Image (cartoon, rainbow, N blue to C red; front, side, top):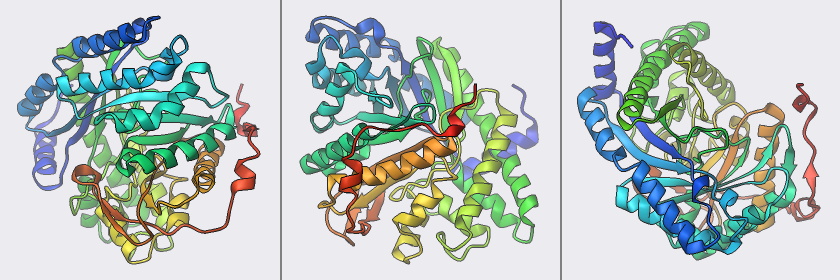
Length: 446
């Protein structure tokens, strides 16, 4: 990969002045060889496989970061969905979660994902046991992240799974609300996502792989601000070009990491991932386009244009684009989104509309602790419907905590946010019907 002098200088400016970083280098590891009849033996095999495979991950990431003077913020691991390992020993989930956590601490990685289940068409013994164990597994660990896929465009929506996740989220929050920051419910979950809490090493992936998640909201915001008088077509073009440059950097880091660790290079995830740092906000990009405040009429259109331009630029820069790839709008992790909520410009309904055109869904949203499980299930079902009908990934990472208007500070990259109001009208009878919402007509693509 050859870079011109101008590209190198531009990248240096992006790092120094516009908060460009590699948000995560995530190693995916296949654990199917660790299946054992004895639960303790399986947990030990899981621990050993993770530690041996990722032993040099952090050291090499620090070395690559120093070589290119480019911050690599997080080093993470994603493993085979643990629900696939539990059919022989359904009760061993928490034991494996603790082994995953010990391995993550031993390796000094930030998070380990894959305490996951894929139940879009129904429950196996292992997947059902894993979902039941999520509250215990998350409260007994520090770095383990969990995800459950309850819907796909091809399969429709498993409403029994949706209601189950509403109950699990409530149970987890009753134990410790902060554990819900490590739990996400998906439709169309990608098997190669490097971002937490939804990362897992999906079926069809290689034995081990490096996936990279880039950042760059500050870079895009700076470009948009410099194009203050441009029409929207011209603005989309400069966003596309900037995304091209950011993606080139991500692929460079990913390929070097894969080479050093002697594993395959997987994908670059193009998602614009904000942080609580002012200026590093997706909401602020939209405001730089001319919106008085994120949430004003036109916000969804601006977000759609941004997401599309980022994807177009990224796929020109790399043939290995994957994961989520678009624009994240997590509430607590984006200071501009928090400002918009404080100003009354955004509520849950506007957020839901925005998720139809961005990367994921309702992310890091705080709701009152007394919200019923059925209402949470209804929120999940709405997001799944958006994902299934539009053939895109959607997710819900929602935290029942406190009371409406309370301020919740999670610390670090997780940021802080107010508790949003929730409508009191019940969806209990609907979500308790159970069964499956059939796949849409758009699923018949053969």
